[in-house]
Image 1: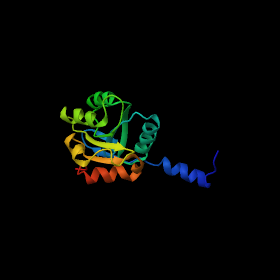
Image 2: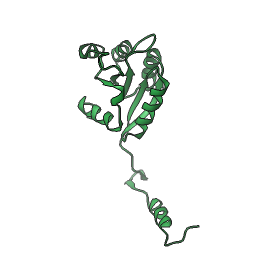
Image 3: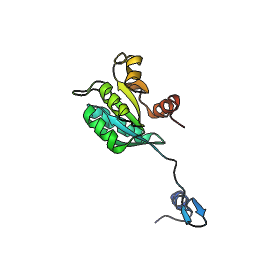
Image 4: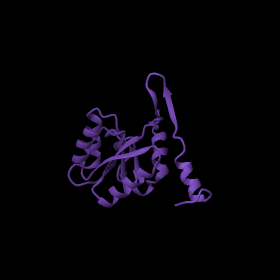
Length: 159
């Protein structure tokens, strides 16, 4: 049991003070809504990159990982089903690669922004990325907590 004057008690009391509420006269009190998260699907054949990217997205304010796929085919199917805002797509995968998968996602009318990721900076020329509907190409080792928000803003997707 914590004493009333202890630092732990003060911290616990602060966490349990009145929650923030908004009121609406015909709905009564309700919890204040959080800003909408940018829903991200990660597509990569390397399990370690999938895990790291998923964790990084979870750590990035305003972004939410909603799924992961290990092939281009799975990525296309999940993009249709989950309707992400952003797809991080590996360029080189067995079967349907990232460029073709990006083309399929964007040509199906998806509103998702597709960003091609690769460990090889020369893997995709800019013209080829644009032709398949990708918004950007990024090196895997450049993916960091602040990178997603910056990329989202630079691509003009933060409207």
